[in-house]
Image (cartoon, rainbow, N blue to C red; front, side, top):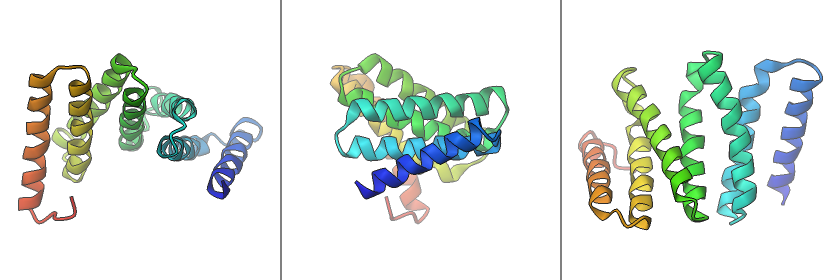
Length: 166
């Protein structure tokens, strides 16, 4: 409860500074704290509250990245999308889950392929596994196998490059 209280206090402070003091440069920090709280709520099994936190975080990230051009936040945006996909899968909202995973994976692919951010490959492999799990839940086993194979191939490449912490 202590960690949750600290997060709630941080959220309240950021919201005050942004809304009352006009400190818009803190919006990405607010989105990060909301995502962190969403992850904790997910791990605690409080799924609807987790979705609420992620929805608010994603809305901020989407505006900052897509409308205001803060592209350095795309990785955080993509992680929030993937984590929300995990929550939606857990509560049986499979089509929303698929949309979240697809958008997240598309961002990661672009960052890796077009922006040469190979350090993101491990996250991509993880999110592909999440999408594979979702496809299994939906009974789409051939598609799930294709996604799992892609994730495994990425992990094998990472291991061959000396990344043994997978």
